Length: 85
Image (cartoon, rainbow, N blue to C red; front, side):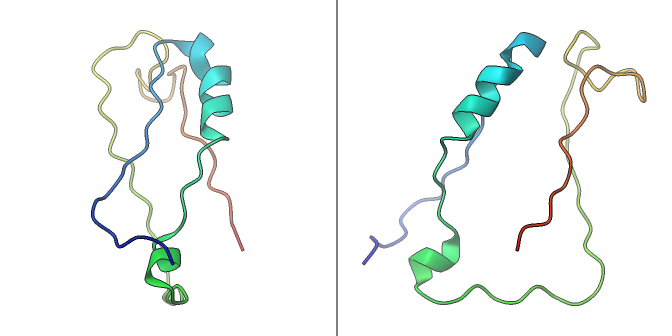
């Protein structure tokens, strides 16, 4: 039986420049983050019917690479959304 939930963990891999991307992908591929339903020992609730809205809140104060600035011309773009069954 898993231990009781006593904290929330957020995972983040920091990039210092575009050359760090390969290392970030390598590090992130090793993350093992079980879903909340595994801790609750019950199935995950079904996804609601209807549209799904995704929002990314980006804080990017400079236009030096990697950056989303200037809009539409930046050196970084978000990763694609992938359907997982």
